[in-house]
Every structure is written in structure tokens, then in C-alpha cells.
Image (cartoon, rainbow, N blue to C red; front, side):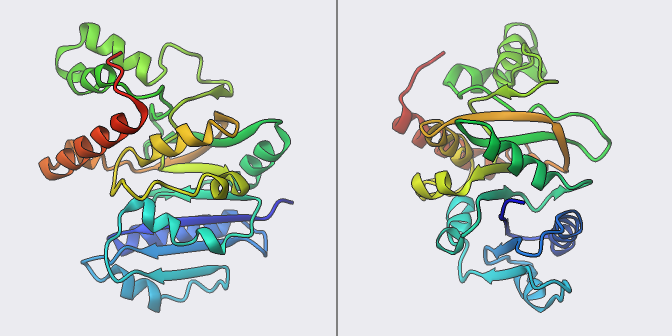
Length: 260
């Protein structure tokens, strides 16, 4: 059985983080599994509560940061600690309903040239989430914002971006792996240096995927499933949307500004 590690970066919502941790521990029985919970200086006291929580499991390590360093840098804090074969990057709003980490890891390590993978994520009510994507472009991102209101060519472009024009019921190569749930070979994660610290939040997962693709294939594995609450903050708060746009500009500056 491969040696596994996982990391959750939390900023708030103690109850949600605890639910994620307990589901991961319950469905991941390996004794040498390491789960890191990094608190990004939560303003609601989540970090202090987590540090004082006895999960009844020595496999959990809680790390409290003095300041909010962002999503990617939060995950990078465990980079030097990892001695696993496969590492999982997980959101605090993820819930496991089965032992999928072992299956994902086995697939990554037995498929020649595989570097990263993600399962099919679902809403709590069972609806599928369209998170596997093609590389972002300005046109596809614009279409994604306008498709719900105007439909037409915007919806067609958004369907293309989210790969709805492909059969996603079978394993499929993708170009944008969601940071909500990434399985990555640990040697690849270390080779590419983890997340680019230039991103505070948003699009760092697209950037990490692009760099992982230089080391091997990135795939959707729909035979594995997990629940993802998916709060969609950029669509709820103007400040978060502005931060997302800033990250997009950094991404295009780095990877090239190709309209389509």
C-alpha cells in the first residue's frame, strides 16, 4: 500500500474543518498516513480550537500560522515534511464517503507518466460539479461569467471550458485540476516546488496544473467520488471577485495572454 499524505488549509469554520478531518481519517485506515491541517490565522478562532481538539488520532498534525499567507503558501508549509509517495491537496469543505485516497494513489503510481489526478466531485445533494477544465483563456473566463445570464455562444464556450463537450464518465486527460481536491505524486509536487507563492488565492491550481503537466499527465478519474460543498466565494463577494481577477492577470502574464 503506498504511503500517503494530505493537507487541508483552513481559514475559518471550525465545524466544517472537523467534519472534513474526521471523514478523511475514517476512510483512510493506513497507519502511516499523515494529515496536516494548516490554519491560516483564522479570524474566528478556528486555529486555536483546532489546536485544542483531540481527534483521537496521532496521524493529524495541526499547524497554526501567525498570518494569512494565502492558499498556495499555506499548502507549501508542509512541503519539506512530506515523505509520502502521493500527496493530497484538499479543501476544508471536502467530505469523503469511501476509501478513495488509496485508489487514487494506486492509479497514479501504476499509470506510466501520470503526475496528478482528481476525482469526480459532487454537491451534497449528489449533483455533479463541472470542475475539470481546459486551460483558462480570457475569452473562456469571460464566457463563464456571462453564460448564466445570456446563454448562446457564452454557454457553448463555457461548456467547452468545463469539458461538457467530452465524455467525463471515463478517465480523461484535463488541463486544469481543481485545487479543491488534487492527488499529486509527491516527487512531482516537490520537483515543481509546490504552489507559486505569487498567488494569494485563486488560479494557483491552474498554475500548479500547468507545471505538473511538464512532468506527466493530469487526469480526471470519475470512478472515484467525493462531496464538495463549493461555496463559490468569487461569485458572492466583490472583494473576492477582484482578487480572482488579480490572480488571473498574474497567470496570463506568466503563461501568455492568448484570447481564445
